[in-house]
Length: 426
Image (cartoon, rainbow, N blue to C red):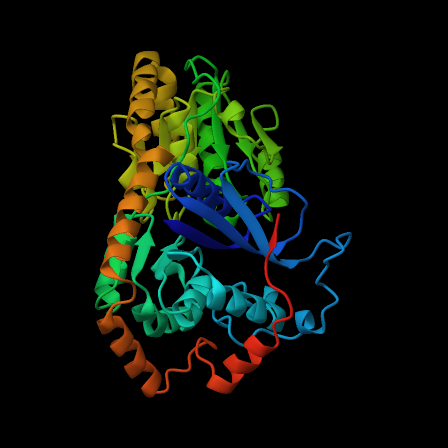
């Protein structure tokens, strides 16, 4: 089976990139797999990719490249096919419209998989008849702005399947969208086993990792750790990641007097070698779509203290077995859970061993089998369902011109005729 993933950008650092690479490598054990990156900014991808997976791109933005596309006049013109409601719309253009349409019109893949709402929309509307059309949701329906949700409501009936990373999000889609004939299935992200020995649970470090963004609520973690330090000044905190909250967090470290106890370490790749230096992981987000860092830490032998925010953590952590779940934003509860594990060596070590065992269910080989079974079933079924086609036609007949998701026939013809060259192999 030939499986093709359509990815916004395969040459950077990000959760969607990492999980797509992990899944592609797992599927490549049994299938012909390619990743089509819309943009290419670097010569080489950051994450490792199995030699059996082909990585190609549609738009080359490397200024030193002989195929540099930044000077193409269409690169300066706004996209008309890529939906305006997608948060990345401004990065797309008439040029990406042309390249994506050509690719989807000519692909010989059996299954085409989108990895963000805008690309799912392009796949739903512009893939040639034949391939199975699968949309992946790496965020959550509830976090999408209303215009995007309305666009997806109109377009997603043309998909064969939609996968989410949590069962909670799958329920949201089933409850709030009418998707007759569309398979909605929760399939978690895959996280490979670390290539380093797991933590021995003796290092007096709490580790956190992720984007320094408001939703991660690292301010809450720092305030909780200030309470921890009052009781256990021999423990310290390392926070890995970069982002727009860095200056605020550094100022908070100074304000709380944690300059000898809490350290902002910057981004780290690979992160596994940093996880195993600690004995406890902390996740204090107000919102998670899944919780990749939770699984990463568990696979490295760390019990995780996490806030029970919607969707991810509660489906990963067994409270009291391999970690602790605490109320979102509750500084005292977070500090209390950290101190519980800090002060009880036997409990911490037992939970760390349980974390390794429980996180094995997220091994990419297992996740790959789930996707392989889904794709095989959909291909056997024969692609897009008749019900989905009928419902989508009704939406279009009603004039649901939402977010630029639908275009006139003349626009599509012009986009296809304007294609000058297709994708390139990395």
